[in-house]
Length: 336
Image (cartoon, rainbow, N blue to C red; front, side, top):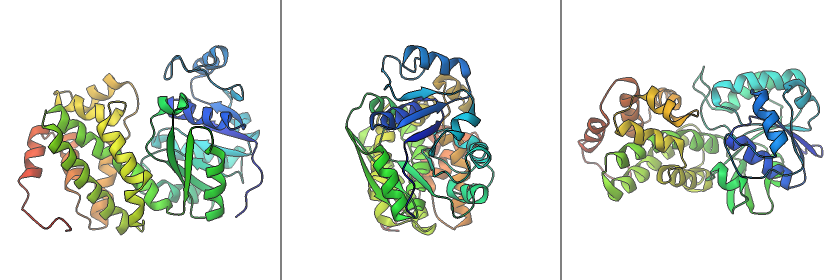
């Protein structure tokens, strides 16, 4: 599918990641309308040319504008980028269907549909129709570094080769390198599950189990991610690429990751609710843990790390006991 030329993009979500991606599109010469739920915050972004709440001190490009009215923001766009929490994904799709039908829709959300537990493209097909041009952008990127225009690389994935390449061209340029892929399933699942595994890595480091334990957690986590991804139809090579191993390494090893910080807080004895309150932003890995475990069980895939994160979050198991459960598992071949 060859898309019509795109010169103006509506970005839904004025958090750190939405603002950073909006800035990248604007640096590449596209006119960007940034929408968010907080009209006061949008006014501040427009007045100060920076997102003081999430990306303080980082100047935003001239071609980035704000619009507190989602209807006008969408109606004036050639394409839409969704960068809101996964819990609002369906609501954003419904707004697009009403105000911007037929526009290409891209998302940078990393999670699963909260009602069905399925990958987000299934919800997009239900609301927008299965002929809509859709894609996802994902990869090892922290918002603040992208906003500062530091070197980074991501993947743009769509079931349609032309769409993935065209979407990649919107973001590719300057300090951002973008690779295209047709493995939309693998890229989506990798982005969702790495958040769960980052919680596990945070717990391990918060309990001071050391570098050996962290390396084992990341490696075995990748094995779980790959098993489930292949069972759902993803390609194995995706999980050793930017959207898989790349994003997993990033979010498990750096404290810019809110999911890792969430795990660190749990290890200190905070409840899940207290940890989220301390972080002050949505922690996608928490609801994704429950949905991912349901998805794995539905497909008969063994995901022991995900299971133990679930036990900590939803069954009251102490983090240290969860690690002991993992270590007590029966020895087996690494390839199993």
